[in-house]
Length: 549
Image (cartoon, rainbow, N blue to C red):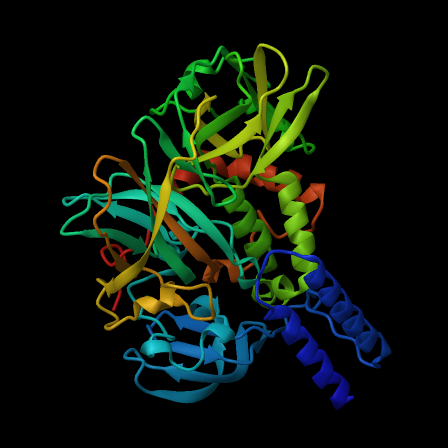
């Protein structure tokens, strides 16, 4: 049996640590045979395991968490349970090391009351090989002055936030890998960065962790794109670059509710499209889709059209993650973040379910029906995202485009269409030359941490802020320059104290990969949305608003 367990462990490691490369036939066959081997071994064993322990209503029933966990206590100390723990009633037991406020000394502990815990943090042990530059434990975030009410209000979050610098001010520009909520979903991102200025041949970006999350940043690289001035450069959803030429005016714009929305989406301004409330209410009963439709005249001889958008998500997805995926599971959310999401088959099922319902599909009228041509992934709820795509021109004199999505899940500021593009551009890849922790926690951070797609990460904790410097060499002055941030990573949400206690709003919701989950999430979202957005954006975590040491 021990031999079988060893084989299973090695096989799972082979699956989980495989380099994430483009899917190809060899990888498909290799993964298939590994999976078959693993299944056969498990079926031939006399012992079966499950990731989740069935929840029992009895107050003294125990729940086992297998996740490597840090317990952040209200008094500022920290307990590391490297092998997980057991919860029974109000008591957590396990083999732990308790660190003091300075994190310089520790002593063994085997139990702690849940009432003493501010947050639980699942950490990726593979990304913590020892003490990475003395920063694995993180800063002291909580003190006796921080109450459970303060933590309950700290709901802002969704990955690293990026600010550009113009010599005087920092401006919010992007949020990186917004939906990479676990290591299995680590992904690349490409965001356009505006308003930054080159100062003494340096381009500076501020990277902030403003949430109760751990950010695992694998790569951050600046792209400088040189192109003719008459074009505007946009990233695509596949992390390429498109040059967008002269914009063709929209003939019309309508939504599913029949409203004329042309003015809302015709330009990049303070006006934006949101789902009609009556359409949003229908999602609380069954899964439906919302859409906006635009018409644009096709110039003679045009073969390609280029669609650009400025948009961002609502907080619908945030309610799904916080309330349904995590809070409704309580302690079991740690097992979901660690074991469950790292299971290859479950991760693939979750990916397919999410892709089916979320994101935005662009459809084109072919004379008989609207046909889906491309899907654009979610953008995140914090920063406006600009993205473009290329489509073939349909037959006829007018192109009808429909943008289809889950009701109340998007805000659309601008839809632009052009039939003019160019391949006359050059991309300069610029690696980070310096990382400075202006929070004062770390010194001498090697820029190599964010240079390559590898197993080294810049790990950041709540309230930390970093300045990334990129050296800009001489380029062609007569050309327009556009800047983009190419990033890769994932983040782990912390389990708040109040999430460990049953909530009347979420205790009946079971997160399953089905339509009912969406319906119940919509019901909860509609109940919370009136006050949730203000509460969300007012709860950014910083040294000024929290007692950070």
